[in-house]
Image (cartoon, rainbow over all chains, first blue to last red; front, side, top):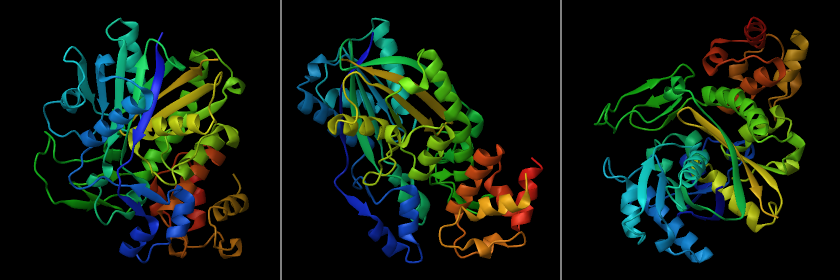
Length: 334
Length: 75
């Protein structure tokens, strides 16, 4: 069996408040937007600070806060869509920077908002297969570097950050059964088109999409309506499957930590799934949507403030870019 | 699906616009409060109240509240 043994996270020092964004977009009704998306401020990585740097800081924090030695780690999984290089994997660079033994395996995987769940799934598989005993999952993202300066919608939602999670043969939360899903037909609904193999150089091209928003080739594009529809289709069905696969009833779930996309979307999901408000985590006021790190950040905060404690059954879910989704139950030890 | 009930549900997506300002013939894109976020609310309403999927592009193609009602009821 595989367990979560420790979780830590790191947020970059620089904070951008809504008041600062308002200076750039004076026509913007910031209070109304903040009330709906639920973000008052977000951390943004420095110009020379990459997702790999954030991941390193999150890992060092995990070692420090939990008395874990880098020597204990025998596998590194890094979830990022902002690696330092095309090659090598940033996970290999982190093995060296963190002083993890050369006998450890390491690789990056490219996912966004579902990435935490996929990391847990792969880590559980590595442990169940006897391939590793202490898997360090790192989730790190700097979407703000992909956002066009005039894209106030996405700049108001996304924050940069990284999380670290140690999955081991023992720990405080048993990792239960997974439900995973993928629909690549929606790839264009959340995409950065240029910079990789299909189109290496920037095109400078922008078009108006069929909703009237500007779609820049060289920056992150999100079709909000399409992502919203996808989420409302995928998440309630996934939730039902997670319950069935883990052989539990909805009433037996003590708490839900879902990907913190934005407050409006979370509240809509909560209503569609008919989940009680007091069991459903919504907290992105000071972090924004940190993509693959929101679930880990949420779990750590809930553990720290006692919302999640011994004996609880917690459902976690991630959903977004890919399109990709995943859900799992965590059973906290008594 | 009934038009008056739909108008009431549509008006509910607004915080500062009085429901009396919204009728079947209202050109909703011209309302001060209309924004892409209100559009998200309408997408969510179509899905949760009526079980229908509509896109941002389809909302954009509708001029009036009644056009939107017809779009959703014909799905």
